[in-house]
Image (cartoon, rainbow, N blue to C red; front, side, top):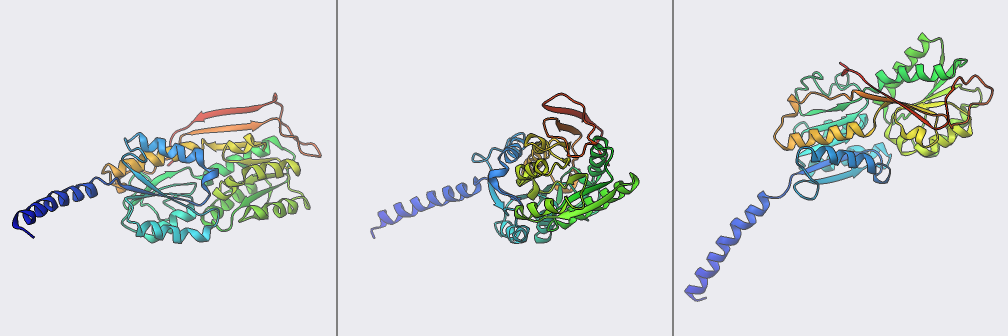
Length: 333
C-alpha cells in the first residue's frame, strides 16, 4: 500500500471511530415494562403510561425506547421475564402488579424499579416508608386492601338483605390475594356477614367458580383487582348477569362491560403517574427520594341497566344508564 493511501485510510478511520462512539452515546435509554397481562387488553393503560412519560419530555421512539414483557396471565413466567430485563441492562423497570414487582425486586437491587400495584409497599418490605422509600424501588400504590372494605359496604348497601358475600381472588398472585382476603374478612365480620373466598387463576376456571356460588348461594361478589381478572372483565360481567349475582370491582371497565358497579381509582391514573416517575428517574432523580404516590381521585360507577338479582332484596333506585360519582380525598398514609 502506498504511503499516501495508508494515511488517507488511517485518517478516515480516525474520523469514523469518534462518530461511532458518538452514535453509541446518543442511543436512547431503554425502559423495561413488565405486565402480567397481555398487550391487546391493556392498550389504553399503556397509552396512559406513555402520556405520563411524555410529561417529562420522554417520547417513545424519539428519545427513549421501551422493552415490553407480557406474561399473558401466566404468573409463573414473571420471574423469567424480570431476569430477562435485568440482563438487558435497562435504565429503569416499570412493573405492574404485586407478585411481579416482588419478582423484579428479587432480580435486581441496583436497577431503579417503578411499581404500580394495589398492595402496601411498606408492609411488603419494598420501601422503608411511603415518603422516603430509601432504596431502588418506588412507584404508585392504590392500596386495594383499604378500598375493599368500602366496596363491601357499598355492595351491602345495595343488597341490604345479604347474609353471605363472596370474594374472588387469584391464588397465583398471593401477596394481593392474602391482603384483600384479610381486610374483607375483617370488614365482613364487622357487618355480621359470612364471607366465602373463591379462587381462579385462569379465565377457564371462572365458569366453575360462578357455578359454585349458586349452591349454597352467595348474595354478592367482590372481585379482587388482579390483572388477570381485568383481562377477563367482559367474561366476568357476563357471568354475574347470567347468575344474577350483584358484584363490585375496583375499576369502571366492569360496569361498562355490563357488571353492576365499581368503586376505586380511575384506572389510567396510576399508569400515568408511573410513566412520569420513570421519566423523572431517566432525568436523574433518585428513586430513594421519590415518595410513593397514592391516587387521590376515586369514582363510584353504577350500571343501573344491570338486571336485579332473582329473589328481590335489591335496593337500587336510579334512572337508566351509568351513574358516575367522583370524589377527591387526601393522600393516604
